Image (cartoon, rainbow, N blue to C red; front, side):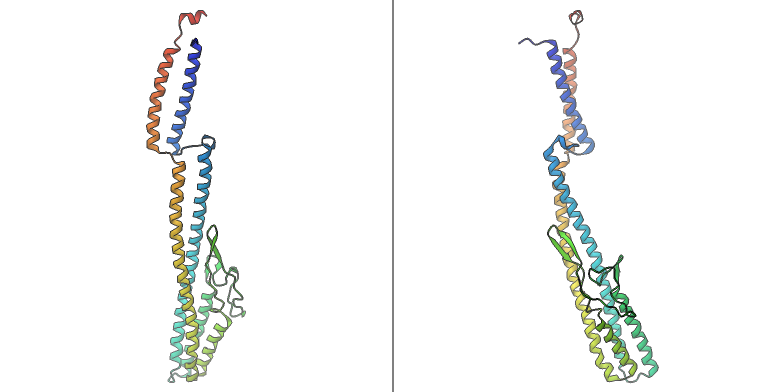
Length: 290
């Protein structure tokens, strides 16, 4: 088979074109840090990348949910802690009022402070996280307690967050008993007995205050258990995020050191090809005569 000048030239141009494409690919990898810049360059990498990015986005959303849950639960824990403090002070004043040495003026002063503590407990019952009431279940836009209007929590629907594709965790707590009408009526009864000055009746009412306080302590323990669970879930999600991002990086990210080495080698090959090609296609006098 006779090899003509045109065949040599065409072959050289094809090789140079392929070399340019390879150089362009390597330059893009260095510039972007990615193996591909278009799905058509490697559909397999592109398809896997979509799945990996979806997994990372999913884990990050679950982490945001956990962060929201932490804040919600911390707000509840702080409110319940203050509730325990209020009831402890309520108890101390009640014990003091049971002392038969108090005159009417002293008992009235105690009763007024007890009234203030009861009102403070109402404020605690209406604690918000952001714009959401945290002690009214899923009914987060409605104030749970209004003593003047005589409204109290009515029923309970939990607030849940998603922490995995098939798992939800309850972050709210059923406060219908803590802030019920019975709770505030019980405190009112204690205040009335303090004003009455009946030491025995006042002493007997201390048990009711203790019962209410124990309810707050018990609920706070339950909140602490939820906090611990959230921390465990958060640790698991952090591990999942690291793994998902590593796998995504291995699939998409270029090994820059290796790419730069390949680029330098390809530049050398390309320059050599240009030199050889220049000699092959040097025009001769016969080329012009033809």
